[in-house]
Length: 96
Length: 211
Image 1 (cartoon, chains in turn yellow, orange):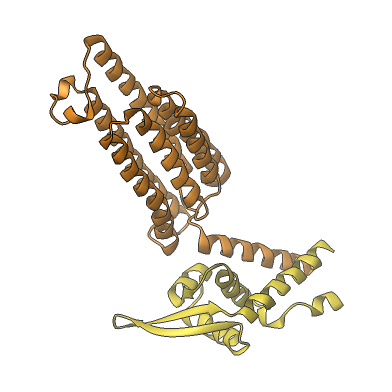
Image 2 (cartoon, each protein chain N blue to C red):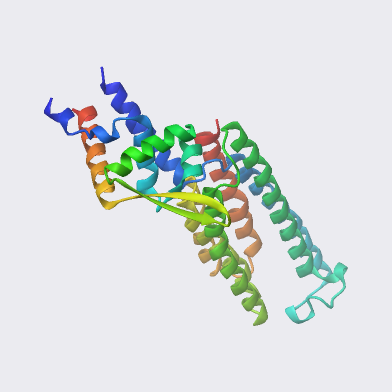
């Protein structure tokens, strides 16, 4: 059971896992890109992003490109570290 | 058991990391076609050179644009090479577009633009360098330089697309270096690099990713 405890509850969802996967290998990603990559609805993505933001795993930057609002997501150092630990736990579970 | 769910998670992570950083719709078939065009171009080039040799046409960079077309093998070869490149780019675009459609991806994404930018940067520098070689009449080094810089461009772009491209680039660059020791045989090295290598690596990509 102890192995499973190492899994991070915050990542225990396909969409959150997806957001983190994209953000750890890219400097940043905007809302539209994430939406297309993960193939999810606006509301769904927004609420899961919010959950990750609350944990301080991702950072949100809002700006304007011309007149259009643009939301940019960036993984924080804490987020990257926690995600790495989560993947290692996953790999151990499968390997063991 | 739940193991399957974790395995699914890992697969999903891997696929998203790949999809968000690499442009994976690059068509392998377009590599094969580019190679075929290059081989056809090389055969035409061979006849141009043979014809020029028999009739004793010679030209230098200084007279490149003053010699009449029919007696100007260099200009003819440049025209054939440009044609090959043009055909290859057009074919690559259409085949890649249809592959992207099949996988429900877009052609003009951040990933593909980054790929093009990282391919064009070394290639443009190489193009300018090649023009400088022409300026100093170092004609023998033009063919090797083009192979070397094309190879470097592929190696640089490979990190943003299918990994096979890296080995295509490496092969072309090495062929270019070998070519520097066999000046005057540029056409054969072009046939090997732009022709054979593209067909081989295009086929590998086709079997690995397109089917």
